[in-house]
Image (cartoon, rainbow, N blue to C red; front, top):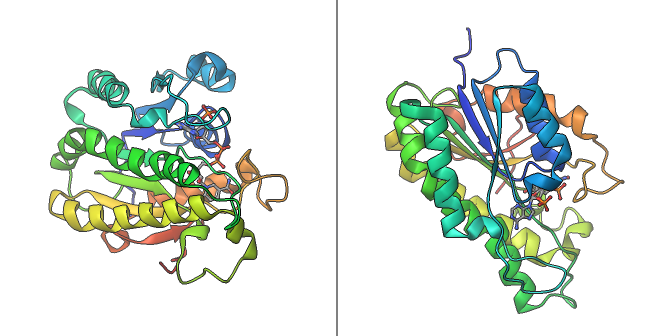
Length: 267
Ligand SMILES: NC(=O)c1ccc[n+]([C@@H]2O[C@H](COP(=O)([O-])OP(=O)(O)OC[C@H]3O[C@@H](n4cnc5c(N)ncnc54)[C@H](OP(=O)(O)O)[C@@H]3O)[C@@H](O)[C@H]2O)c1
């Protein structure tokens, strides 16, 4: 059966890593969405993203403005939580998409910091929670009117209609806590991602009536600044699988925790 097309997708955290990889993958996708809206904190520094948006007229680069507030010298507070910045971006996106609304929101931006039980502090917990959990909920809330608009124009469930993709992690699985000792060094990250998974479950239940699907996605262990050099997958190897999973989402996937190959992960 021919897949219905996703006309518009917005991805956060596109300056590098998986976000940039997704934009690159969607630049060459066939059929390509009408619009790929890629957000990042510092567009002036995101040279590859700039290049992509110059080469492809359907890729639009927008800024989520940064805040000057710093919790630590080495950990910037989540600028995606900045309400004015989110409002500004929503308005810009609305101007681009017009009355068609937004089909797919990918909450990709995220941060990690190594913090074992001995190292973890309240400040680190709160900063990571704000960046990896609160921001995703606030961004989603702000884009809901545009997602609802898109949902009204189609039927079924999936990225062709309206979908929220929360970039989660295997490290968030409560059932797999003992499966990987490496994750014991990332208390704030895994706890924030587990909370993000709860957001997924709540949104999936809450927005079903609107025809908006929501999933958590573990993209795979991928070589990025966050994933590190030991990761088995390079970005370009992982992206086709992720895009295929997204393209094939349907009602049965609503509220699920999937990996980059479409497999189901335990919560
Ligand atoms: N790589 C993996 O193996 C792996 C595995 C599981 C899950 N994930 C998840 O996949 C997502 C992308 O990860 P990645 O590997 O691509 O990481 P990455 O290479 O470190 O890139 C992270 C992206 O998020 C943005 N970002 C970070 N903090 C931000 C903030 N406070 N406000 C706005 N944007 C912020 C960064 O922007 P700047 O350039 O401005 O810092 C960057 O574009 C994350 O949610 C991560 O948890 C990754």
